[in-house]
Image (cartoon, rainbow, N blue to C red; front, side, top):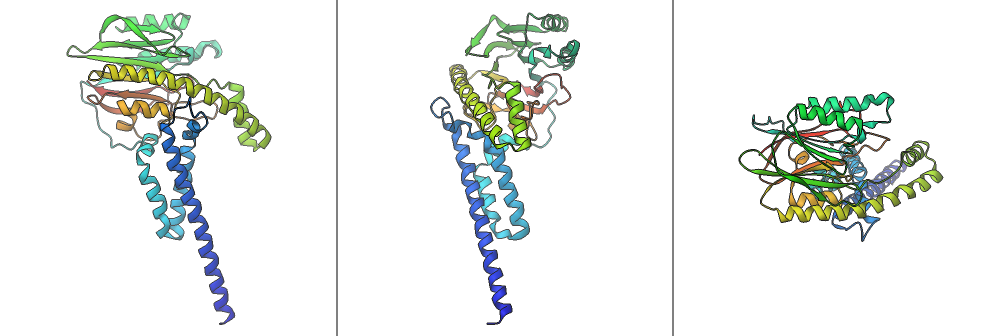
Length: 361
């Protein structure tokens, strides 16, 4: 055998070895992706660390997409690994990145808005953000408004109350939560839900033909301080291993404690939803959990997510401190159609963006 042929065979052998290593890495990524999808079935109170694995889902998905591109330009036959990997977990992928063709809502559809207003951001200069928040809410022309971190008895809260009253809204307020509706309320009292750190309220409204149970929730926050978020972001940026480990442990401990509390709240809300099964239901709020989580999975087994049904893209709703995540959600019962779900990124006066959707009752 000539030297040239030997070199050629050696290069072919190296290429096969390199492709085999890449295929193994791709397969490992796919297996991890599947495993992360299964963690939504784990109760955070029982498996606190594993229940946080859902946060890795978008990272693993991006890596898998990278492998797909690599195979397409190098050895297209191996792309089957990535294709099969994503096909198996297509549902959570669409929860993370919804794909829907544009469709216009019927004329009788009602506009719903859910918005964590961060207590009107009263620490901002001259409360300008608070005035902007009030302006956005009043100009939204939404039929049903669900606010979290509302601060009813603050000066800003009283100003918003008066403006909503002048616009013909009726209101129910409890535990820094508000439901404002142009549809009349049925009954006088709001139902308190899961009041163990943040919480939820529920009340019925009527469109003249039937009632709609409106549930507004703010599930337990992760309680990661601004400084802790800043330290973690800085460690990632500087690639400081020591700071990354120490700040990472703090963040993880906060996540685990909060996830267990959210499980209690989620289970409590699900018991109510199961109890009133057959009614029309609207569930919305700041749930502090991503689409691959115990909370999202529990709600989505009972109700439809409007972003999945009529949104487009990632639906990022939290907009501060380098943590872009989709944690605000609107769910509806099966008998309610949703249209034109969107995140309004023009409203920048809170650490959350408002989420809006039109629903046909």
